[in-house]
Image (tube, helix red, strand yellow):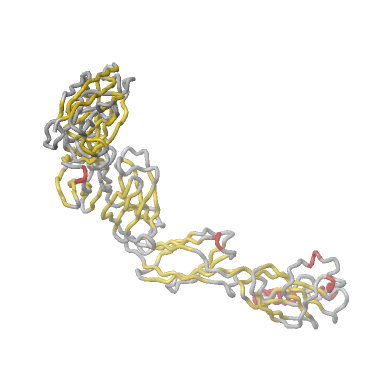
Length: 576
């Protein structure tokens, strides 16, 4: 739009200035925004929340509009002379609804205006309509504290209605703090509404309402109990937390080297919280625990009473045939009224000290129970982790104390004292020529027969160990050694295989007989019996039939315990 300087000079009078001011003010109050170049049209808003409706007003000629253009007209070189080269989606409607956030340029084009005034535009900004993110906290003396998160939306300002009939307040992101305190005239429950604004325009912009009840004074938090669930985990139970103020869980080791703070959320953990920290050791270390409640208005912290954890451990060992378990506990003495020991949830010994121990004797490792300690601090209790002593594979049962041995034919029979504790398995070890021991077998009873006797052995040495009912391996027994006598032949010159149990077989005597062989021949020199087992003699049969009475010849050869080869021949008489 062109302005004639001479015509304008006629208005430069006091009356003219007044008229001009009224014109400017009327445009400002109406909220209309003119197009950028020729003021061919106006819009009611240049920024708003999706979805919002844009209205075109004060159109000076027959004009068509492109609403969804996102290209800045300044980047179109033919915008004034031929805008159709850049923009083509025109329509006659003078109202349009924007549903998607973004920056748009409303292009207006008219053929009825003089050349150079055909094209004009207005920049429109559409922002996403989302609920404002904020927290509201109650403070003492009916004061509240509002905290708006500026980073969660695209609004440039907010309107705040505190719900008590007071004037609506406005916070501008560019100039104001996101924190706003407010004091109500009277106690009560109020609804606080925060609405996003786009250049002061609330059209289609979202709001969010929260209710809050004011506080006369800040409550004191109360811890009811602590319970150690494991080395790194602690369960804290407390009175219901007030969601209007901030609650901080504080945990500190007794030596002060470990500390941690956790903000408790009353909406998810109203009365209990399970705390886990891989760097903490609640089984072996004592920690102090408290909750501090803080109002946002003055940051004054109101602490709960401090409650301390209970550290507890056990140590087990065999004492003779019994298992002794020592339970040790420790806590903090501040505020401690008593310490109780529990066995299978049943109360046992009571202490008034913050350290001490309890002893239990078990006759069998399978009789172990579940144990724990519980301390009392005022009205609060603090329970240690459950103590279930591990008696499997961690103890050393007492060793076998005695062993006897006897050479029977070509075997050596062992008998040792029964294990002093329950067992189902003994392992027997034999000494090697290099003075080491090797396992040679197992037995379910306190006896064993060694059938692997070798020549050249003048002494046999053994040890034995066992497992108790819980898989604990005993201490190795002392070394038990037995000298071997040289095997001697004690062959009769006659025998009577008549089944009366007396002198029914022709056998050699006891001893070590290595590489043994016995052969029996009839009177014509025929071999009728052959054996390599010194304990198996001739029973007076041939091919399963009783042999004839009369004379027979024999030949016996072997190596004795001294590795000496022995041979003997002779005759015998079979009598029936």
